[in-house]
Length: 403
Image 1: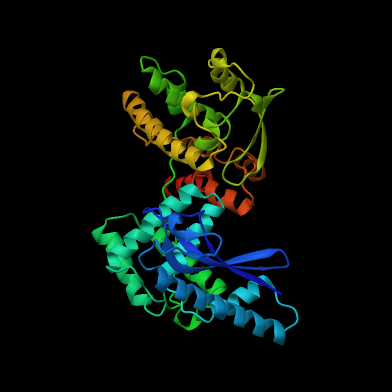
Image 2: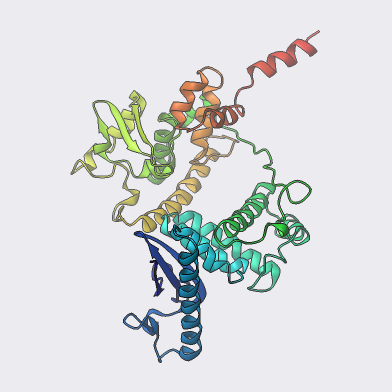
């Protein structure tokens, strides 16, 4: 028999400090949550009775609603388990949820809460902001899936491109988010497919090609030999070069490097993005930078670069927030350095990865580049590296016009 309880989900608070009320369904040690769309402060929740305290101004109405939903859930579970001997907790949840109509923004709240549970803090922050912009465009806080049609989405896309002046790739990110939440609703809440606005003849999401331009050898050498810059600017250059020397590892991973990550002339670390374990030989140029920080080393688990000092790396949300702030500061300093060196290309931390791709070009076998980039699929490597492999097309062009 499945266990059903009403709980206050304290893991995800809104900006006003309120938490969502959910129905928890447990069977065979597996649990699913059905969110009611109602929010209250923790001080107004009675953990013993699992009801809203009288201190809440709408306690009576909310408790009547919760008891009604709880009764409906129990009745549905009893009916399902009577008719069908074997039912998973997911299928029971779908049966219960199928009895109620879900609003797009109600599902969005659950989607966002799931991002937090998976500790995708940056993604949660960005997606929450996009949904707020979508709400502002609509001028309301509610949206039925029936109203979420092709006409509305085309209007929103035009609003993003021509009124908010966002880049085409950014507009695609908004549409992808809406599609992801819609698909989540189809899977988890049995939202009808007949009004689905995406696909052939409807809204088709196509990624515009993005320009990826990295520094060339001469420009990297300028960074390696730069003088007469401030200490803060030199620190930014050091972080950039460290990323470049290790095939463009992400700035968050560079900032979290510890002395203990280096053993027997190799770097061993776990990527922050996909948790893959990586082992790379430490180039002599990287050793030179690392040795310039050796005087600050007191313990083997100390961070090499000082930017995250005082930040608890166990607090992933705090760490991600700090990394974002530090990256903005590093990019500002790199812009100043680029101007002093008369480098006209954009210079940012992410460009270190593009620069490695640009200089490697078609000199390195694609399978080796896949290992260096830590891509799961070689297709990803091929698509990425095509931005920097120009020799064949350049030779072909010369053969045609050189007469």
